[in-house]
Image (cartoon, rainbow, N blue to C red):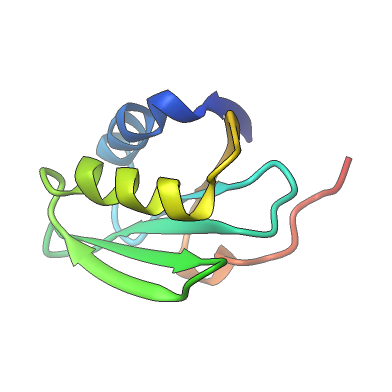
Length: 102
């Protein structure tokens, strides 16, 4: 888990996803952990993006389309946030699991 500046989430997401093998992924959450998005790497090289919060959406994109999608989701889900939380998911079952509260 790491707190990342919201301006760098696209860059950080791409860097972390390149190092992961399918079906692993990352989860990006607000500070309060009540809204966010999950990005899961698929076997065919595409990415499955799941948005949870104000809206519930599922997208399938390539690595090149990811920054534009993250930017639009971040405006909607993290409107006043300056920092967001990054979590690594080893498998899709970990998505949405309760995280440790401080």
